[in-house]
Amino acid sequence: MIRGAAFFLVLLRTCPYAAFVPHLNKPVKGSSYDGRADGPPNFDSAVAERRRLSRLRAVVTLFFGLDGFVFAGWVVRIPAVKAQTDASASALGLALLGVSAGAVVTMTLTGRLCRTFGSRPVTVGCAALMSLAVALPALTHSAVALGLVLVVFGAGYGGLNVAMNAVAVDLVAALRRPIISSFHAVYSLGGMIGAALGGLVASRMSAMTHLALLAAVGVAATAALAPFLLRGPEPVPPRESVDRAAPGASPGPTTARTTRARTGKVVALFGVIALCTAYGEGSVSDWSALHLTQDLGAAPGVAALGYSAFALAMTVGRLSGTAVQERFGQTGVLVAGGLMAAGGMLVGALAPVTWLVFAGFVVMGLGLSNIFPVAIGGAGALAGPGGVAAASTLGYGGMLVGPPVIGFLADWLSMPVALTTVSVLAALAAALGYAARGAGRQPPEAA
Image 1 (cartoon, rainbow, N blue to C red):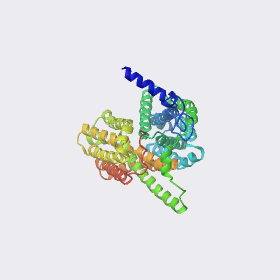
Image 2 (cartoon, rainbow, N blue to C red):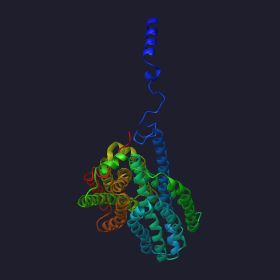
Image 3 (cartoon, one colour):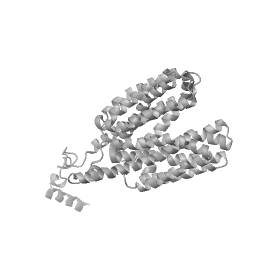
């Protein structure tokens, strides 16, 4: 013991304290604690940036929920507006095309608006336009007037879908996590809440009062969320991903043209994947109840639950989409999801008993749930807002084409056979997803 103490005293005498513990409480030159830019990033600032991005994510998520809530609130009042305008079924169908026309035209332009003004201001403007326009259908008294105001409503709806997805794609790159499905899950939840509340008040409140209140809620929510969205941090992709994207000198004109052409082809591929998914979603929403009542003799109330089961499965699938994408990757989600949807719809279309049809719809909903968000996210990762706009326009086209094609084939052949085309396109989406492997891949989660 005494010998150990003596040795320690000799060590202290030969090595002064300042040399024994060099710069213990002093900043080391070039470290993250001396404020130099060449050192590693400051931990506190990185945590603060992560928190700011998380708050921005919450705001964008609420815009997705608002979009679904307002749109579903309008949909449940279509019967009342039809009675008010005294429109026939065919006239109403033509008027409802106004939503599609306004959405498709605006989607093609919104990518350019986002590049010029920024995705977040365009998100706020389109949310305000959609919220204000949702009150207009209740003021119309003819199918023509209804169609015209629905063009305005569709313009706000379509522009909002492109702009907020562009912001979401930027957040995916900045947070380095495949969170795109979580936004679409909240859109689905907003739609379910909007439809449920609309159904509750439908017998107690006129369409004019309901849609006016819906507009007020939408405008108030947009005004409350806008400052947080506009003043939030600009999502910036990690430096290493930027360095990988542009190593060395700028590419020459020929290389740039080749890259743009290749990018355009892959964006179109993602757009077709989105189209295949939307074809199935639109077909099930419009024809599932008729299939259950006409082909299986289900009661109307039971038949209505078929689409509810499908929609609930879609929501659950999207809520778990981030974990699924982190586990299986973009290609795994597209391929496995497409094959699941194809098998589920085959069962839903051809099964002879109601409970088995319900099971098929659930499997199909789980399979389709993440394909559309992943396709839109992949297109946006490759080409920014323009990619989101192109893929969204193609995807929305699938939702437009699906229902009439199913109706034509049902008259020509039969409803079960017509619904099998959904399986064919879901399988096509799986094949295209495999062909697009590695393209537009979401960045991996930060360690």
